[in-house]
Image 1 (cartoon, rainbow, N blue to C red):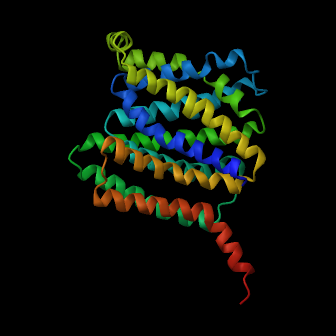
Image 2: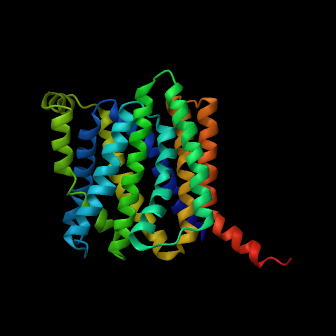
Length: 298
């Protein structure tokens, strides 16, 4: 990486890591499903007025939007609204890497490597530890519900990754902006059903400046800017050089949540987080380590 590319990567990691703290701030004044509707409204407009429609079949554009946008963030925002800590959410969401590997194997016949299976096993142990910590915590079932919803968000993100692979090469920025049109109405309808018209009206009338700034950050910083810069890195550098950098996102997320929100991990949560991170490292770097060991002289 050139110094400029490294700085670009660090900016994206910081934007995405801080994303979870910003979500918590936004949720203090806006219910989760309404927050999703406002976020994607701001992502789509006015961006689609300046960006060409991506050359993608409508069915795949809808599949991408309903999984990686609607599914992922409906579950994630709801999880954090019912008690999932911001820092742990940033880590548990990375389970999408393992869901993606599994779903790709089913959809495209991709071969699972021993390092993938070992990484999944180790990360699953870490997730079990985090789940046990959620059950035993003082917040009880609410935190456990948040944990389960975050896993569903990770699974939705993975489904979107599989759809993205099916779509193939296209302008990522155009794809993100135009696909943002699709989840807006479902988000509003879900908000109307689950959160109620009175809550929606009250939230919009009395929306606070921190909530507005949070929505602006989620739309322009985390989504449009983050995906644009990330797409440039993926288009100019080998994937194996760029993809592992996402492992730094939960590091930023956990640290920011601790510093800004006072989220301190319990010992069992800390152990679970470390084990999950170990599983992610095995999944990403395992194949290269095994390849180097095979090439090494006896």
